[in-house]
Each structure stands twice: as C-alpha cells, then as structure tokens.
Picture 1 (tube, rainbow, N blue to C red):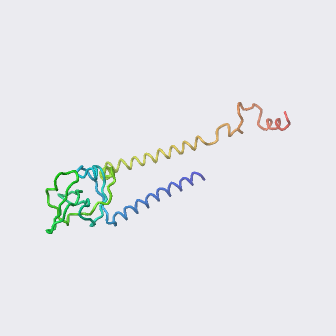
Picture 2: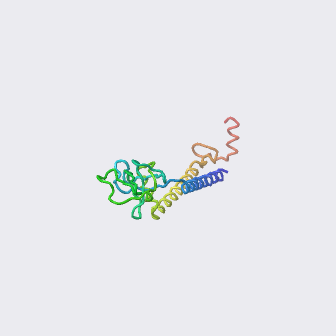
Picture 3: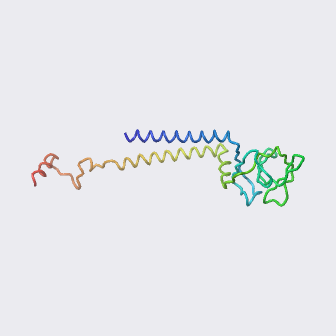
Length: 188
C-alpha cells in the first residue's frame, strides 16, 4: 500500500509541475512583458552584466531605462530625450556620451521594470540546447538518485532478521520455539 501511495504522490507532483510550467508559459506568451539578458557593463552600476531585465512592452518615459532594437539585437540603456522627428536619445549609465546611433521611437520595446542580477546568465544558458539539455539531465539524475536513496532507506528500516525471529537478543535457543514458550510459561 505504501508503494502505491508513493507512486500517487509522485505522479501528482509531476502533474502539478507540468500545470505550473504550462501556466507560466501561457501567461508569459500573453502578458505585455519581455525578458532579456544583459551581456555588457554599459548600464553599470544600475544593471550589472549577466542580469536579466523585465521589460513592460510599450510603457516607458524619459529618464527610465528602456530596451530597444538595434542592428538585429536588443540594447538596454537609459532614455535621455525624445525629439520631434520621432527619434530618441539613449545612453548607457556607464558611458560618457549618448549613443552614437539613431534610435526611433518605434524601435523601443518598453521600459525596464525589474533587473534581477545573475538571471541573465541562466537565460543565455537555457537558450542554448546544450545548456537546456544539461539541466534536464541533471534533474533526471537527481530524481533517480532521490528515488534510489528512498528505496535503500526503506530496505534498511524494514524488520531485521532478529525481529522476524521474535526479537530475541543474543543467541537463538537450541530448543524449538514451542518448548521455550512452555518453559517460560511454567516459571522456569
């Protein structure tokens, strides 16, 4: 019975994990937010390299850190000014001068609302098929080790040889068990 109860909990745990991941993906695909990895130090100390930035798409203002498209990539810098011709001025906090390239308002993805440090490293790592595969293999290995450790623990905590013989400490008497019981019952 304990084995089937453990199996039920295992299946329930995996189902709960699948539902949670599905919900995160569903919300992530529908929400007006995007997540990007920061690879350079141009926004130091505000945002350090290897951080991630959570960007609220379409919502930004002058003075805020924004993410925008440029040359096929995404850059995260501070929005310094907007111009009447539809362009904006951006600058990295660690840079001495504004960005030398032209950024149009239509290039801006949105304003940064959070920048968790070190999360960008994991985003880049998991985006690579080898990184994602190593994470999956690691989780499977942990699950297998956990499972085998649990089985070994159940085997060790089961009844011992002495327990199956009637919990006799010391050597087992040479007389049959029914004679020993009679002898004890007679007050010997």
